[in-house]
Amino acid sequence: MSIKPDWWIRARAREGMIDPFVEHLQRDGVISYGLSSFGYDLRAAPEWRIFVNAFNTVVDPKAFDELSLVHAEGDVCIIPPNSFVLTRSVEYLRIPDDVMVVALGKSSYARCGVVANVTPLEPGWEGNVTLELSNTTPLPAKVYANEGIVQLLFFQGERPEVTYRDRKGKYQGQRGVTLPRM
Image (cartoon, rainbow, N blue to C red; front, side, top):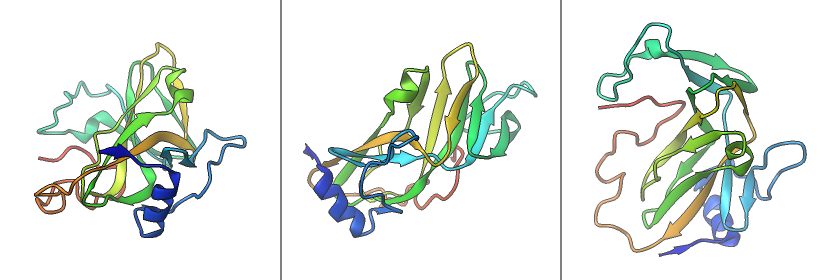
């Protein structure tokens, strides 16, 4: 299994793996996004689900209560201290059956205490990527829509016996910010 370079990512994107696809890294006045040497930097959409403790709700992945979230839209989001926000990628991805994708946080945010967590994108998965952004600082943190938020790394191997699509994974085809499902 090897990491895939820019020319491979570009060819797969033209086949529909990433939509919309930005051919070159954009970075003038923005946190960079688009195609890089060995990855692709996704953009955050202007949809935000901000975690707050207004109703003493317990966060439970088996019985998620939306009272713990404030819904917001806009070009920026302020993440409260020691809290986190959910957003989604602008891009819709269709992962090939022999590819595994790992997402890593952008260093510009990491250096400000904002940590990105995205589970691996499995072979055969497709959808908007739900992004979890944690503010680890005691101060409010600002994140920007339509700018880079995480970098994707693509690894190609043998096709597994069963892909995410084959087993009808619960997050297959997700659009928008997707909350925990059982």
